[in-house]
Length: 238
Image (cartoon, rainbow, N blue to C red; front, side, top):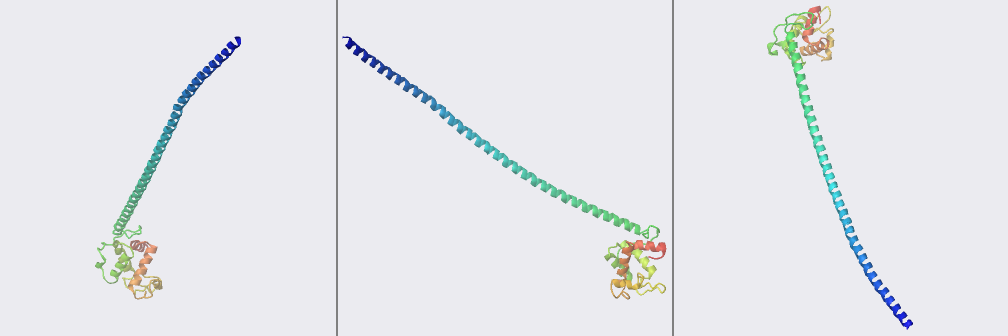
């Protein structure tokens, strides 16, 4: 009888353990399912966060690229404008410089012509040289040739009254005039006369050859015919 009750107790205990194990397994499975369900939203949040961050970075990179492109464009436009302004300023400077030079030359020429009407040009002697001709057409012969060649040499018409007086005094504009005492020859009274061969070999008879040489001599030594005439008035020769 006791043995029978022992067997019943063992079986009852076994059934209890079995029931407890089933219940425990059920709770364990439920716990794992809960944990899995809890873990799933966290992974999805992480993925969504990564995607949002990458999108933000791409947007920032695009903004930086656009800003750099705009800056390069602005710098290019600024450089082009600076080059254009510099070119325009240089052009204005050249124009102003040219006008200043032309004005100075005109003032100098006017002063020379004014001085030529009342002075021999040396500064030591003041003497009237007569009216300034309108053109070389007012003269004839060697004087007309001398006036034309003087203009070609770069002197103003206001210088011719001085040249006319100078060579009237020296030779009377005679291409064959010769000083018997000194040997000076021709219209400019070159001493010796063969110096004029530096212009042409016909220096003895060609008035134009003599005049060209005489104008070169005057320019090299006195600068202008009026300065040469003034020197001649001061000392008697030029």
